[in-house]
Amino acid sequence: MSSPDAVFVDREPELLVLERQWARGGFGLFILYGRRRVGKTRLLREFCGRIEGRCVFYTCVPGSEEIARDELIESIHASLGVEVRGRDVVEVVEELSRMLRVSGGRAVLILDEFQYLASSSRSLAGRLQRSIDNALSRDGSLLLILCGSAVSFMESEVLGYRSPLYGRRTGSMKLAPLKPLQTAGFYKGWSLRGILQAYGVLGGTPAYHRLFDPSKGLWRNVEERILTPGEYLYDEAFNLLRQEVREPRVYFTILSGLALGKTRQAELAGMARVDSRSLGKYISVLEGLDIVRRIAPVGRRRPVELRFADNYFRFWFTHVKPYLGLLEAGLQEEVLSAVRSTWSSYMGIVLEDALRDSVVELRRAGIIRPKPVRSGRWWYKGEEIDLVVWDGEAAQFVEVKWGVVSARDAERMLSRLREKSRRTGVTARREYYTLIVGGLKGEPSLEEGEEILGLDEVGGRLGIRGEEPQD
Image 1 (cartoon, rainbow, N blue to C red):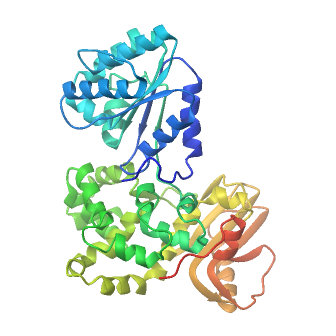
Image 2: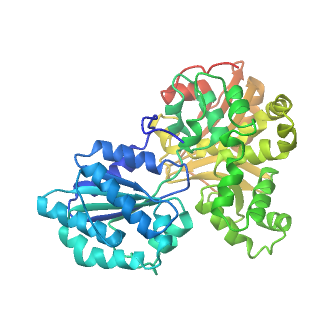
Image 3: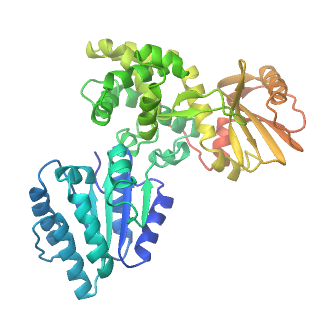
């Protein structure tokens, strides 16, 4: 999908975790996993480029352990210039560890897509566990990193209590998609509004953003990279689900219902024709893949709603799947026109979620005043507030609107926000009421604690200024 020289965007905290593993010295077993295309391999290559050590990077593929053994031997020779032998993969790893100990050296050994290697032999995990206990820990010359894209496999067969490797790891990390503001690194010179729109289409998967050309406008990228049959992003949602789940039809129905605004599990179970009591297992798989998330109103445990966590899937099921017939017929312009006609309402939801996922950054910029001890969306009996943040001393209530609002409408929205805030049960000595909008017409009259911010001003406070190319 991308070359090792591709832009590397904002994974400094994750790099620090890996660097600390290396700095500890001795033997280490680190487990890195996450959904396909989320940037695991790119992160590991960046890590290898930054440490003062030698790295062996082997990508496992489906096949026999014998083939994997031979390929691993070749990778070690190519990376370190040493010859190792062994009857199987574990013996090769042991021999490398021993040679490094004798020479006083140390190295990182990365087994990428580890699920393929583990699936080639049921005994491999057990043999590796014995090797860790009896040889690798004693040698203290390897940082062994097992990386995998099969989330459920890595959680159950590598990290799970029943796994032979349980208790041997020195660290682990599930690599999450990028947060909204982290994707700004792919769009140098773009405004916050443009960056959020790209995020609204592609979500937080780095590999998807690398397919967009920042020298072109949003809609040209959408037409060329998503709405054109044969392009990678045209059917990536279908392909990823087909690789990751056993019953794609059920998952497709759940996500299609979610795109239609069905957020209650009972509604989705009816659409998918499954027992509502069994829907939870499907939702858990989608949560594990960072495609959806369950949320509850701040301050309460019920009711629970389901929402998209990944905007590429939100966009695909909202704006691509319903029009596949038109797109196959070459009618991209008609589909693009339909997408743009509902774009404001679509981006309103994206903006709400993006702000909730960026509370820490917004507080650093002085936009959010309280410490984000508790934060989230509130709703009750048809009323809702997009974002509530409070820390016991101060509370802030935030409404967002993607479009441009008049000064009079802004005043009404703030007044209504004050009324709704009294029903949340959140009380504090200092209260703030904030309206974030796409644009503002006129000069509204504001009361104490009220503030109206346009997206350009929010971007300025976050250090994001610019203008995206026009289509």
